[in-house]
Structure formats: structure tokens, C-alpha cells
Image 1 (tube, rainbow over the protein chains, first blue to last red):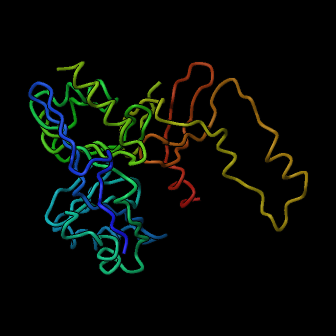
Image 2: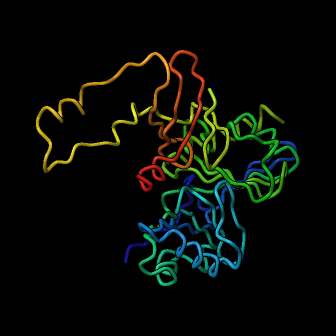
Image 3: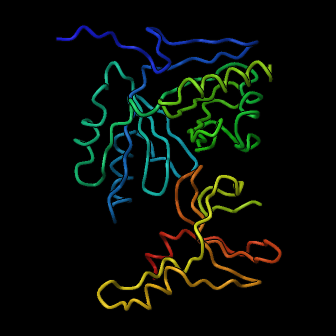
Length: 188
Length: 90
């Protein structure tokens, strides 16, 4: 057996936390991700199965659904990104495959994306500098893909102005973190 | 320029990648197409001064391909459809 110690997307042994003013940026290595893409003609059946799994309707375009254990974000027609706690759902893709069988193609995404939570009064002021999401209509439960620092990221609103989740490409975690902390310093 | 996405509402055109004329969806049938058909499909384009149906890929968004009807003189967009839906209905 190799003696390897796990590191976060930013290379640390613990999650990085940065605070500027009242806003805190927290790296979230404890999020397991998997994408669900309905197979041809199966989008509705897949949405129904997801509804059972989520305990709430499968998110419509531009929406997300937060739940326990699974949360979901609409990615595209017939496509969703599901997340759960990493400690209990490390094998999220296999769990979803059991639930959705041949309705959808499931792809493990935990190591493809990295997750940041931006919390505290003024989070929207930071977001305003980072991406072109229309924040006046960005309510809790809204989620969209947008471009931050030339990186395609999912931006999820959990609470207007005070709580936002950003899911971005893991290979560019350092650049994304740099962009967000720079915007925090500029905005706050 | 703002493109009114049928699912996501108005989005900045900077999120999109232009993919050319919507005629590209009508690919010749490989079983029956002649070399001339392929030549026309690959190289010949109309260059209308006016209404043009074209494909825009939502690269920085939901990654769907849209058929946008745009006036090439004024840039006015008169219709936006999901290519997936239009193809399914064809």
C-alpha cells in the first residue's frame, strides 16, 4: 500500500478559508459530485426518478434543489449535477446508477470540479465583479452556469446576498480562488 | 448583443460561440450524397443582407445549441429556438 495523504483542490491538507470584511470564502473538499445525463427519450422518466431521490421536483432550467442527502443543479436539457456529502456518499456515482439504471448516464465528477462557498453580507458585491449573472433576479434556489475568470463555473444562490456556492473546474482551482479573493479585496 | 435563451432568458452573447448557418443541420445523407452535395454543404454559403438563421452554441451556459434568426444588417434578433427541439420536430 502506498502511504498517500489526501489533499484539497488547492493543495492543502485542510480546506482553505479566506475572510475579507464580512464575507468568507470557504473551500469545500467535502462535496461529492456526479452528473446525470438522461438518455435519448428518457428525460421525463429521469426527472421523475430524480424527484423520488431528491424528495423534491428535479430542478427546472436555471434552478437548483437543496436537500438531504442529495442536492441537484440543472445543467442543461435533461442534465443535472448532483451533490452530496463526501464522507457518506464518496461513491455517489454508483449510488445514482443504482437508482437511475438505464435511464441516464452517470459520470463521477468529484475530482473534476472544486467547490467554494461564499458567505456573508456583501457576497453579491463580490459576485458582481466576477460574473455576468443577473443578481437582481438571483433568488435562493436559482443556479446558472456562468464564466468567472474565463472559467465555466456553476453559480448557485442559497440565500440572496449572503450565501452563494461556486463550483468550478478543479484543474484551475488556484486561478479561480485567486480571482475570487481578488474580487473580495476589491469589493469589500 | 443579448440572446433571449428559450430556457434561461436573456443572456449576454459573449457566453455563446457562433457556429454558422443553420443549414449545417441538414447534412447530406452519406448513402446517397454526391461529391457535389458534400462540396455545397462544406463550402457554399449564402451571405444574406437581412434575415439569417444561424447556430449559436451556449458555451458559457447550458451548452445547448440555439437557432437564432438574426437580421445581419441591424443585428435584430427575431426568433430563438432550441436546435434540439427543432430537430426533434422536423
